[in-house]
Length: 256
Image 1 (cartoon, helix red, strand yellow):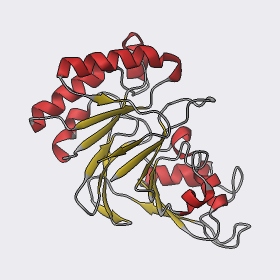
Image 2 (cartoon, rainbow, N blue to C red; image 1 turned 45 degrees about the vertical axis):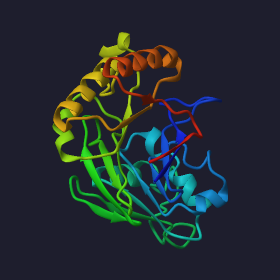
Image 3 (cartoon, rainbow, N blue to C red; image 1 turned 180 degrees about the vertical axis):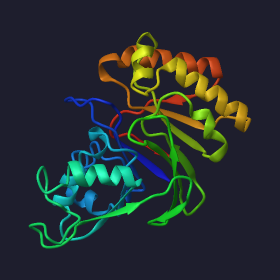
Image 4 (spheres, one colour; image 1 turned 90 degrees about the vertical axis):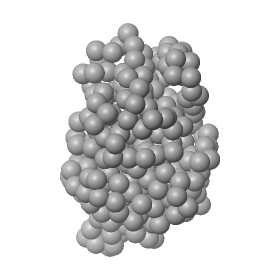
């Protein structure tokens, strides 16, 4: 399983992109920077898009992708609430065309909305995908994704503290988890249902207690304005736990 990090931040700038992952070139996970980081031929390889929740920075590129790939129909997979937000607020016939309808100017549907039920595994283009509810607004979910050769990762999506309730439901070899702000902004992180390094540390302690060990850990979704401080604190967590924690930048790949 090859994971390419198209966007790894919570804010966009010349050097940072909104969160989006690409697995084996064919399965996209969240769509913050899905099209801006891929060539047209690379976009054509994508067979399905998973969306963790309906916040704009995670669904933004779906309409652009639909424009760029209008000669085919691509499945967009998410919980019913996320699909409703996408169809009623973005591809609604006002802001963007209704790409799910044959009544759009394209005269055909280029997006097919596929609902995903939490804790129920579903085959998505040869991958077993399970949506797992996480503590974040708009019914946010993470995804446990297993490839045909048995490689398994868990992507938290956006989440606040409280992941201990789900650790027993998953068995990943890789955890991709958000850490948004440094510890001095812990109150803001908690109010917005995000993590700071101290909260992140507690989540990993619980994961190790429940599973007996820690899988490989990757951190994304950092605020660029506070990244130096947050990276330093994440490194301190890694030292305390005696593990390596990767913090990828845009364009980097990880092989599982």
